Image (cartoon, rainbow, N blue to C red; front, side):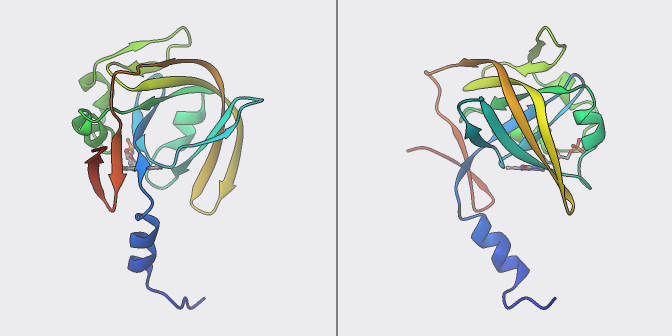
Length: 155
Ligand SMILES: Cc1cc2nc3c(=O)[nH]c(=O)nc-3n(C[C@H](O)[C@H](O)[C@H](O)COP(=O)(O)O)c2cc1C
């Protein structure tokens, strides 16, 4: 299909929507995510997407639980680490394990512990809907922002 707009312009336009930054973590690894959105309070659901060709999504979704770690303004290096292909990234980020053996990153704005509620395959992405099973929040930190391919802070 011939589009009437340039793909680079589409990417830039999508990127004009400022987001927070989080890390989706499993028992053994994690990756940086800005497609997070809250979905519902009752039941308590969130949604994000995995770019299948970039990430081993089967391995990530295998165990049925994961965590979302909301990054603070001083965690750009953590965002870059988890956006990398480093095979050993989890061991380079301070974390602890929850009762389900899922990695929870230290010093974040807060985190959600989730079970997988539904997965929807769409082209080269999978939409993951997670149900919140536990959470924590740190109200003394500021968020890391991602806007037009750059990190920003709330001023
Ligand atoms: C700010 C930012 C946001 C990202 N958001 C997503 C996302 O929502 N979904 C996704 O699949 N990849 C996203 N990525 C890319 C993944 O983090 C990257 O492909 C992944 O870490 C690759 O490593 P892996 O093969 O170990 O999973 C994002 C990267 C950055 C820098």
